[in-house]
Image (cartoon, rainbow, N blue to C red):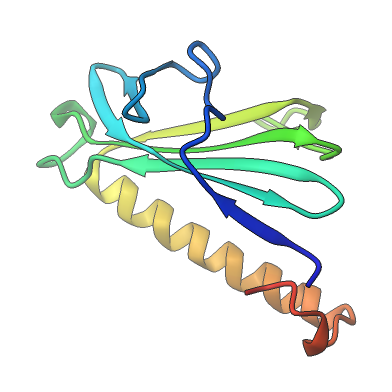
Amino acid sequence: MLSTCRVSCSPAIQPGAFGAADKRYSLEVYMSTIPISIATFESLNVITVHAGSNCPAGGDSGHGGRTVFGITNDASTDLRVGVNGETPAEVNSVEIVIGGDTECETFIQALEHALSVLKAQVTANGLTKDEKIFE
């Protein structure tokens, strides 16, 4: 197996890293408390992902619904982000916050599409089923 996943409530999100995190592993984002799940994935690099949502919250962003997705480089990850068409620059962590119920739905659809495309491309690029990178 090339990759492993360690799901935990480790203090991967430190206060101030992405917002005010408390010991219940929630984030305070624009006056909305969002429960957060944290998972760390290890291979030759290590990344921690956090995600959560309080949607549905009754409508658009003004109703307080928020969805959070973030990635942190814990070791040896070449993580770059481009914003508003700018050239991607190296960062240690990135977080996306989306407001609204339908925005949460379409973000999930977009992530599912991206996952499908990436798995298909990596498989097409030559990994064998015995390597089982996707479990």
